[in-house]
Length: 119
Image (cartoon, rainbow, N blue to C red; front, side, top):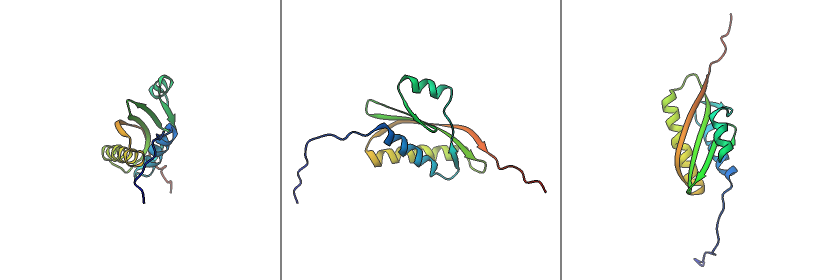
């Protein structure tokens, strides 16, 4: 088999990066759902980012910058879960598309508590 590679380039659509970040985040134990973007996130989006359901993403100088807005379950350690989200999303982006991550900010927008059951 030849070791020949044709010259060319690969382009990764921003939607691919958004999907990777979102699905990776939702697969982490303790994450209940993505939070809607509002306030600062929307201001940044209007300037130069891309967004989808709780993910604000920007690619600059071949680095990926991500803000993730989540609602967590009530029985998790917020700090540990945030670190796991950062680690797993950075790893997924790097492994799947070969891009480097500049920064991942986690925004805990709420904690879901189950409604109390009345006897």
